[in-house]
Length: 243
Image 1 (cartoon, one colour):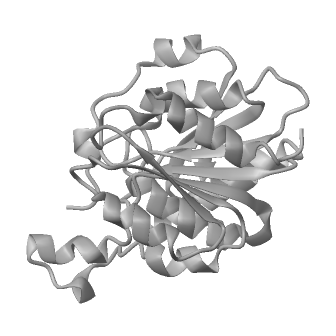
Image 2: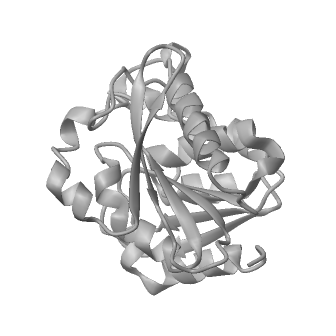
């Protein structure tokens, strides 16, 4: 019920991918034999300010996140779009532990080709839970985290579907991970979110003194990234990062 790659659609075809400017495509081979796809969208602004890793929500693919990637590249960041195993063209079966490790592997691979002064994680919905867990793995290498439409934990939703939280195999306990982060955290959440209530963003913001909550307007899937307030908050977060 948590992972829905079948609902994400077909994505872009090979010709469309090849036609995208500044996009480098790679495959990451993991220790268990799974291969996951990753794209890097290069910024034309030099010197590059850092690496932005964008982690999409459920029923999405990296193919659909190019508009956000382009906005980040216009701010001087190279953008890494790692696909989750089992989604799109990537092989394997998704789980919390495997996806988090796959993303760390993709970041390490990207960092081998460039010396980035900062690494920023941006996760949307399900991706917010991935982002916080990856940030814990990265430690001081992580400069900032953006949590968009985040949930406290998947386990906290379990009773809604009649499932005891103890049986949840992929709990994504952001409420336990967030207090352990020492980097700045930006929480973007709509007051009208009908899937993840705004109260989740409020309670997460209260867990870390370096977390900032920016209330937005719109539904969970209404395209918050098309609003000015969304990017104004991101600009304020990354402004201190050196150019």
